[in-house]
Image (tube, rainbow, N blue to C red; front, top):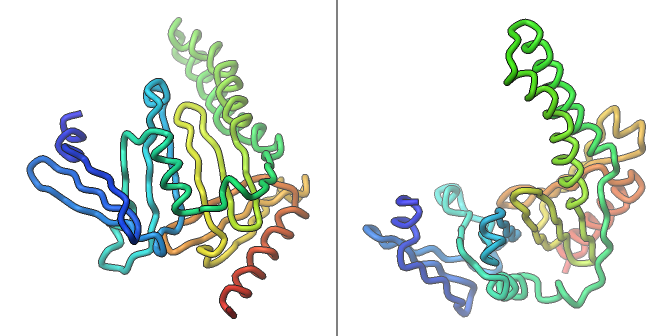
Length: 242
């Protein structure tokens, strides 16, 4: 809390003609700028306490040279929804006017995470309880799997991918819920991933690489994934030729 107060003391976040400017700091006053043409994608998130106060942690991911690599992410804590909407409209003006097609990952996403985070740790807890019995390990073993089911099912239900002609909008998270907004014109490469289980269920993962990181969507139908990849690549080629 002390470090946060020192870092973001007297924070000022203002709109400029070319983008946004952040000023903050107690002992060392620092200034960071986010220029709209360089912003690759936006991400805003809120943990349970922040949601109680209606606040979000906003991050700008912008392109930067090698020497500015550590400064390419600009963080603005304590934003209200109206402020997030203002930034979103500046970055993606058509985000509310365009029609969005919303997808959810296949249930394989839930099953795989349940095995990884529920069943495998449960086996370890059962072995621990058998070899070194205590009531603590027994209760933990009994509660682990039901708690994991509840946690992962709610995480699965909150994961959505919005697709439009101009960009991608993702929503995810359970305890800390986050949203990401990406314009197709900022994509530099699209990579299609398919594991053995994905191939069995005709699913695919897509990763969209930008100059400031990547945005991923998981476990969508293979036909929809290849169609989206081809559309984004064709759009980038069209933009490059105009």
